[in-house]
Image (cartoon, rainbow, N blue to C red):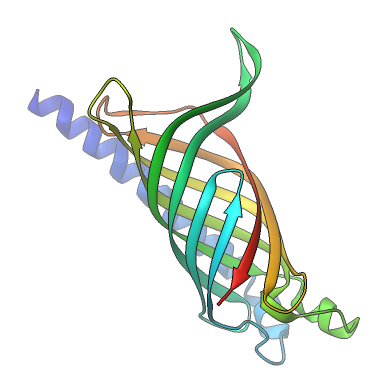
Length: 198
């Protein structure tokens, strides 16, 4: 039993180290892009968003002219999109959940948007991102399930009017299930949101 726990912890540590190394490589590879940005256009602000995953309460915090971190808490319904060997294309709504997590977003289109005099409000732009989140599912017939999700994605965010914004992202991620001590296969992730900055 102790050997199984050690192997599971080793797998989780290896997965975490791989993601940290990937983020470092991603940030270093875009260093020239970050240096090209002449003035900071990213702003820090709280927001409420409603998306296909549920309701998010978040805070976008600018770390640099092109990098921001977005911690959040989310409430909603689990969903699964993918292609399986047994069922083909899958879109399932599942159990209710609560999530605590954080996005790290690297904007790469800010200079072009500024040169074209496009709207830069509400951190409008294209970005590459990574997120890590803890998910607790409220299961009907059990005590609940605990997961950690790590994902890499591409997304956009745009200002609508005044305090409103919208955005979406597409990417790949996987889950670690604490109850079964297993990792999921890599899966497709997507979300579209409409929000209000506070």
